Length: 160
Image (cartoon, rainbow, N blue to C red):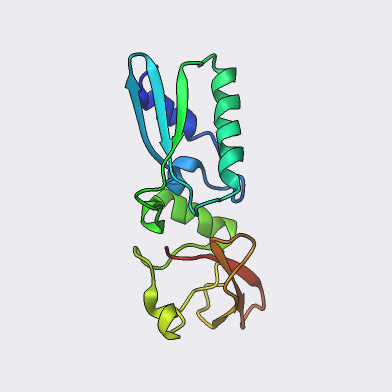
């Protein structure tokens, strides 16, 4: 199987923490190469020590076993560090449809370090009358927000 076919297979692996988006759309699959008949899949965690990475490796192994692919290696790299810039447009659209506000910028928002709070639209009603409840949401890569108009809480995928 060529590398395009491997990417197609990997697109079937959902993120265990946000199953509406796959690992290609999330941008954690950095590369797929073939050397001497061995497929090398390079992945980068969204956070160093992300507990979902072991599950992702297991899901890839299970999928490849079902496809009778045995000649592969999964390599985890930490450099360069993952960034929300790597989430595809399709991934951002799927996050929004799933009820998670996608990152609002294409690079890390350092204004938060200065006490400035970004304006995040509610994924349910699209209001910008929202406030951050906690810097950490359902996972470390998300913050918990609440809409003052529809009163719904929601996760915001933080810019990294």
